[in-house]
Amino acid sequence: MASNPQSANTEPDARITTPEVDQLESHMAKHDISNGAEDQPKDDAVQGSPNSLTEAGVEVRTETVLPKKKKKKSKSKKGASKPTGFEEYYVDAPLTPAEFEEERNIYDPRIEACIQRYKAKRNFDSERKNMFDKYMTLGGINTEPKMFTGGLADADLEEKDARDIAGMTATTHVGEDKQDTSVWAVDFEAVVKGFFSSRVPVLWDLTTEKQIAACTSIVRNFLNYILHHDVCPEYNDQIHASRTICDLAEKELFAIKNVSSAFPGDFNTACSTLYGGFYHAMYTADKVWAMDMASNLGLSQEKAKQTVMAALAARGTDAQIEKAMKGTSAFHVSKSECVGFEVLEITPADSETKDFYASQPYGALQPIGTLKARRWYNPDAAAEDVTGDDEADARCPWARDAEWVFWVEDHVLEHCFVGMKAEAVVTQLDCGVVFFDAVISVFCSFFTVLDNELLIGWKDHVPLEPRRRRGGGDDDGGDEGNAETENGTGDGEGAHELD
Image 1 (cartoon, helix red, strand yellow):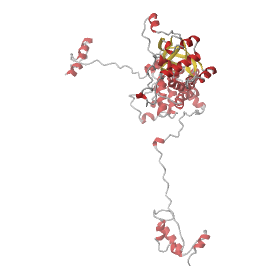
Image 2 (spheres, helix red, strand yellow):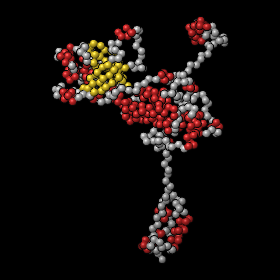
Image 3 (cartoon, one colour):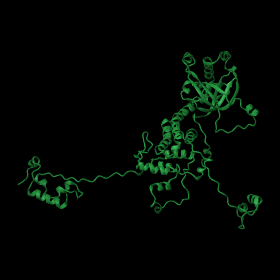
Image 4 (spheres, helix red, strand yellow):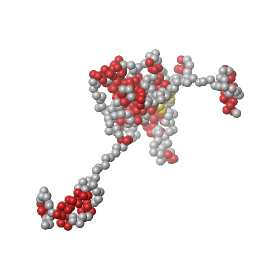
């Protein structure tokens, strides 16, 4: 009796007991087709039997399910999703009483253990590690690998705990010479000031706010770790002040980047162009050979005269305006010197000055405000090569306590801040107008230079062994014998090299 395909579809739970079905089940059991043991197409498995269900009008589908292959994770991406510890809202977990007592014993001797444990609990990338190591180096911490220790064998680490292993494998350590309090002093705030104001602008070109924030967050994160673990409570006041410097540096480092590109402003550039300053004869856009150049420094003579005359009309005194009626050529330079100055007060243009500039037919002239500054001496600058007070006064036209009021455009003043320091050439005209040009550098308000910078890369001297003569004895002949050897006339190495 043949099976009915329709009944098989309408009654899926009913068992078919025809001889053809029994033969097919026996064939499938023999070749283990139901378990997918044979890796062959389903059609061949069914059509290969002479008594298959195809002849009986019953269709049976068998599918082989292959196991999915697991994707191997790239070694370079391992740990990429792990928190770095430098996230904006990252905090260390609260300490248990046992952990607190343990860390009290660890951190009592020195801060070396604190730095080692901090680095072990943070996921440093190459850039963060470079910045942190530079910060440590400025603070007198040695970040170079321990040389000539012979490495660590497994037998050396078997009986050591995690604390001892971290100390043995650490690359950050404090030298024994730092224990001399007559030479070294602990000052967290000074190191942070020196790092952000003196080292960071030189070592890295941080042009965006995101880059600067990433740099300050590294130091701030380390200071928070010290406070959280109560490493050195006697210096908590310094650490809190250091965190304030981190916040200030984040604002001022970005501001001095903008100021450096905006200084000295149109008015100061115009005065420099007309009166033999840095920008004199530097404008070349009106030359035929420079027509295709994308940009030019300085201002044209006509534009410079318009800028100076408008500024004198807006802010000049009656005597200055009267003299300006004879033209800009009536003014002459009275004194000029490259000095440093510190900003004391910033006054943007008032409404009257803005209305005056808006009514001028000269074109897009920017209204000017005032920048009050006093003389400042860069502690990192070379000392003046003068002897005696008279000679020093003769060579320095500006008084040591001189103050100036510069005229600067509002769009430049927006980036300035009180306490900002700069080095530039300050020039005064015979009418009393003061301008600056040739800006050399701009610094933060907390600019600090540490003597530690002189020790970066310092290597202790190694005593030289006495030079040996060709005969095998030590060269104890004194300076005279050494001179002969160095000149190649004696029996030493110099004579041997000339042979």
